[in-house]
Length: 472
Image (cartoon, rainbow, N blue to C red):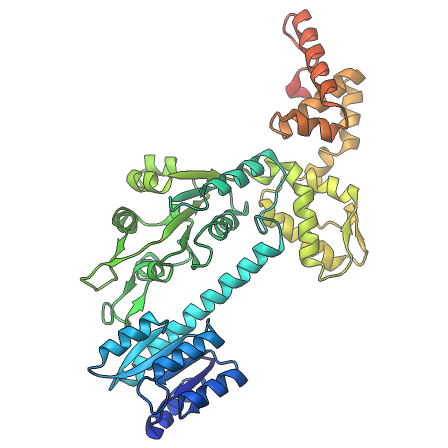
């Protein structure tokens, strides 16, 4: 078990100090020693340690008193206490006072290493959660989750309603639409924000190992299980577990997950004891789970347990009004602090692409454009679009659309009606937003709609220009 990190060993027994320092250094740690609680406090004030291993019984200040002082100096630093066999009461007091764990003397060397490994894992998770919270605080109220379309505003409103409860959430949408980002936003907008958010991709791990990853295992449970391991459910206790690509989970493991959702208990592989957990489940998939149920590849009972709060993220091609906001965000993200911007023509070209890879593909295009272009302003010719995207954008460009309208001998009124219909469809029928985009008064928009209905009625219900023929 190779590690990195700096550990302070505190013990008045010089032989024990030297043994532990040597053990830790042999396994890749940096190790420092202190012979008393007072010396330990001085060293912690001078040096940033990643963990402390301390004896409880020492002359002068005890390990419990040291624990209290160190938590005031560095609350996030894991502290592991050592206690003699038969002093379990002291260990219980230590855990209540905020110790990460305790080790009973005499102990095997591997026990120290295993406990430190868990301490470092938790430290890494906490640091990642702090980083994500900072990212949420530094941007909008929903972090990096961006959108101005009616569909995204509905998702924002739903997140506000569900962030505080513990109900399971099922997020659906194509790859690249930002399902994990929605899951993170739900977690960090609610009361569990200070607890872990742990994601796992159900496709990335073989099913035989996925059970151990989720539920943990006991030492000797299978070949290679040389030590007991906590699963992700235990690590996420009090927080959120995000199960990405849940549609790829095997049927056998689906049944075990269902029991966890029903009983709020997990059983590590090889254990006869169940462990209570308080974990919110957010699952995501790009598959049609109803079709998977019909094909007997996904359990109906599990689907209904997960689908308590469904959230569907539409593909980017169905919300082109989100493209400018996303594109500008990606420019700021990848410009490295330099003054870079997209021209209005470049934004228009981006809006006319289909984005089969959704926001992830858009981000890649912006990142490549910034890397390859030396211009401060990114123009349409600077965008590294593929041949298919170029053809799609060209077909939907304003020049080609007006050419098609002229070829069909459309009147100006017909062309206006067609454009207004497109804007209304893009805004989900929101006339206030449509009027803002069109640059007209909302009452003008209502009057045009009434005049159009009158023309249709006078023509016997048939439009002069079939809408499907003029759709872009």
